[in-house]
Image 1 (tube, rainbow, N blue to C red):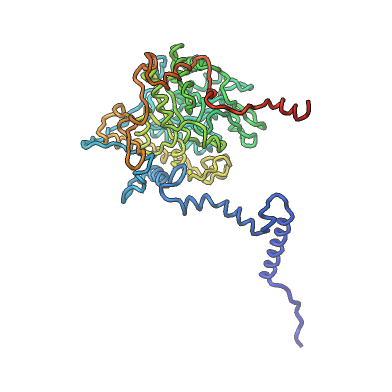
Image 2 (tube, rainbow, N blue to C red; image 1 turned 90 degrees about the vertical axis):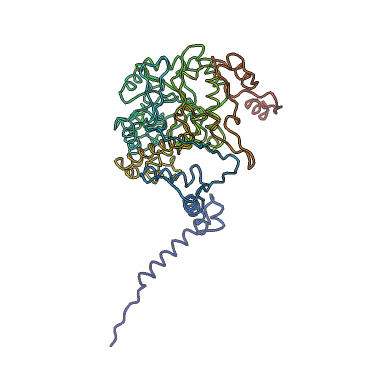
Length: 538
């Protein structure tokens, strides 16, 4: 007699039933929700759109874009940085992939009698006549990046590389953290309008706190940030949720509340006041060099600073020019894309302003903004820079893959995050030497290029040594492309009407910003309150 058995569904059938029920539930939810139009029309299938969108950057970067069309740094530039950082060299084969006849292409003039590269790279003196502890900086240094924007491990890896390689690391405006001091590298302490690391509880500049920190032996100079390339003209907000105890300690801020940087400084409000503040910082630091950083805006404001220098007799030890194409920090898209002067134009403005006012010999010029190779150093020095700084390439040497998630705290390489699980990916003992090798090989590349031009020194390099293609049939040198002022020309009376006009209206006693335009009629704009009043019948 056969036994009767109860039939039960197998595990595969049960799983299929559960899956079908889940999809059906999701479909019902999509149909009833009111936020997304796509899901109301295409329930379930509409989610594929977000899935595809989520991986679009990776698909674009790794499978679609060519070696030369990626942004901000193309694949060729990234590969060069990675290979140099790993000590693999950066030689390529089969010729350039760039379109060398396209408008905007730059090329360097070589010599028929090239030289051997100099044995050791030169250093640049930061220290004017009032500086008693000058600092000789490298031709390429680590540009400003704060702890908070970068992970502690990333900051330490860069500090390790800078110490071993003999170049400087700028702190960024987020304060002088323990990670910037870990391995004893030369430090340039930057602060902005928030005075992080040297501020009172009310957010004002604290001279006692500044003096205590700036006189540490690792700190070689101070950099005042007026503006930066990524977001010139605005302050910033660090949300309370991102403020860890370490960040709070480095910035001298409280936890549990948003940290707001004002748009403008409160320690000074005029160009003359800024020069006196520079002198005060130099005194508090025991004579260490003091500079300021800006993304160039209105040219008359640069000349206002020069007039203030002439009036007070006080000059910064260096000026760091930040290009609008730079920026490791997060910023509104409109500011990233449409505000600020590109680095080349900014350098020309600063160079002309200092030469035209007879101040150039007293003040060094640094620059930052998409500087990744030796050719970038050559082009910037040809326009007036004495030395260069790099930020994003240093991040790449530390492991950054240009995922562009720096503002999300989900950096996949652990470089730009405060997530401990992610930041542990940056092994300091491995990444530190990579930072050092990238800097050394890039500077060596610049020395090789200089020698190929038949030049013995960067002092011999000028705007006539680099050419810019205007269209497929025409090229001009930087010397022809830009206006160049002679020594003291603004003081003696320049024949250039545009420079003469800006010099005339420049005012050492106020930052004037962009001037109103009187050349176009504009629609009358009603006062908001008055408009509201009329609408209400009041």
